[in-house]
Amino acid sequence: MLKIGILGLGEGRSTMSAALESSKLQLVKVCDRNEELCKQRAQEFNFHAYTTHYEDLLNDKDIDIIAIYTPDHLHAEHVKQALMHGKHVVCTKPFIDNLADANELLDLCEQSGKKVFVGQSSRFFEPAKRQRADFEAGVIGELITVESHYNADHRWFLSKEWSLLQSFKWLYGGLSHPVDFIRWYLPNVEEVMGYGMISSNGKVAGLKNEDTMHFIFKATDGRIARVSGVYTSPTQPTQRESGMSVILRGTTGASQADYHELRYAVTTSEGEEKIINWGDSTLKHYFRFEGQSHHAGEYQNYLEYFADSIEQGFVAYPDMKEGIGTVALLQAMDKTLKTGMPVKVSEILAEYNIKL
Image 1: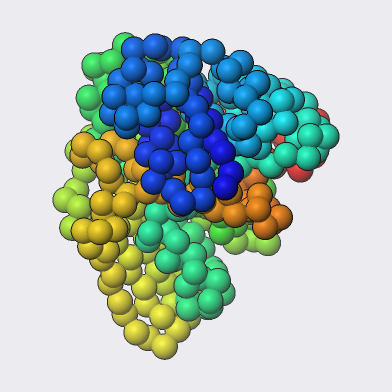
Image 2: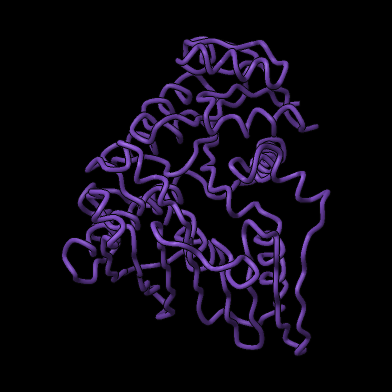
């Protein structure tokens, strides 16, 4: 059984639950620089092997995997240190916030022989898993286009000082989920064009960056896709629209995976129409805490998938290269918002001399 340590116990709360419930992983130690948070998690999970020093995880020879859930600007250094100490790595999204770090990490990963997995957790929700399985089985024929959105009533963010900083962008924190869906099905996106705005709610609060955005993507084979995000206005009833969805439109069928509702709809090649809802036992697997603030089930799904990749020798996606590619695409999206012009992903990669 592989042994895991966790760095960062905010989002890492879900990973603690996942590791403790898993039959494929053993939780050895957790770390956060906030000792009070360590004590809170220790009491919550009755797991008391914690430290406030990252070096204690790095130097623990029992630990095979370090799972990183720290602020974005710290990811590159934390991943680097883990690889240098011979650990496999799980890192939450976005993988890094500065593409200047990409080549060093790519080289270090190759030299170390260790695996790096990017925790794009949305792929590991039940509806998304079922949708992918149906797609790979040819249930909707050949893919024509993909659409995804993430709309959320986050007006409560506007009362938080950090949301009004120039550095805070919903593009990276929110839209990274639907953008990952696009890259999952159209990995060769070459160009993006988009528009964004600060809503009237955002303007009153003093937001510095867009809270409402729409983008069109073009792949190298000519196929197109669409992503939208709206974050400071009310949402429709969940029976009408999920907060996050991905829609696949194929040559002979179509499907839609709704995230939080654990709902999946498909029209098959044979013309059969189905709507699937998962019941209480599945809901309890995914949502283990108050409300839907943490999705421990999807973390357990991806940790076990990563563990299998180590034990069985296959590549777990998204890997480091895919994670870097997604960051490059997000930066291209950021640029098109500023310029009002289409942006090629290759231009972003070339700026940092990155070859994927």
